[in-house]
Length: 314
Image (cartoon, rainbow, N blue to C red; front, side, top):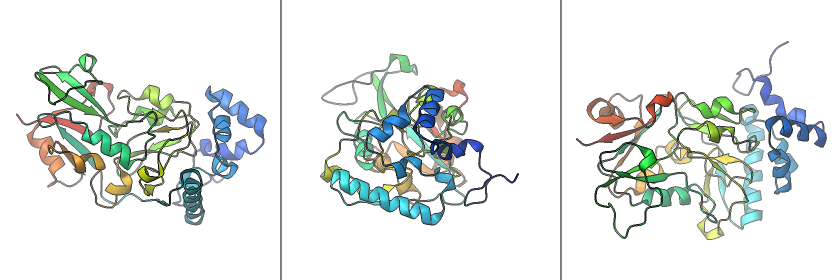
């Protein structure tokens, strides 16, 4: 039998037939939820997700026409639920690009401007506020994150005898999160960004357990964002408002970076501690840093091979 293929001609994994299986009825949906160890699919329906949204095909199977219909539907749903006029696009990866990120630990002073910009850019829920970036206050001379303080509160930063270690999705080349997903709702794109199909995610949170960087977040409730605080420029696989009951995370602001812009966290950094670019460019700043600086990889022994690097000036 000839295997099913997506609109790019790639053979599809049988696991991507999940929604067709679900159409058999509510009893089947409950059975699949039990197999995954959660009842997230049924909970998603109760939280306001339409049946069309719940039963739509995996992102990789969507034809251009069907995807365009879905983008318009998402825009209408956000307008209905949040009173905001938005534009949702599907921004594709660029050829010849592998994104990398480097962070200068000598320059970072723990001001958390990156956290604020990320929340605003990526339409993260405000109550309680979700944050993709964790800034850890570290004792000088130590690389042991177990000794860090996430909840530091100083009138001025940096504090004496401290340095700061921002942690977010490392966009790993060997990501454990994608391997444990039972429905293939998360995968790595050709430009190195690991993404999530929010409509396909069943909320089992296996990916959260697998991530050694604590970089993924679970949406326990409908996102709380005031209409005037919503960023109307949205990407389907990045910063569109996510439904309740799914996992989300940093995507290097792919709706920006795939159009030649910087991630929001880098753009607002007041100390110039963040560097972003194409790892395939031999003359790019990322490759200069990797060749000439003291580079540190967080939890290197986990074998995830991150595309996120830390370095020192000296």
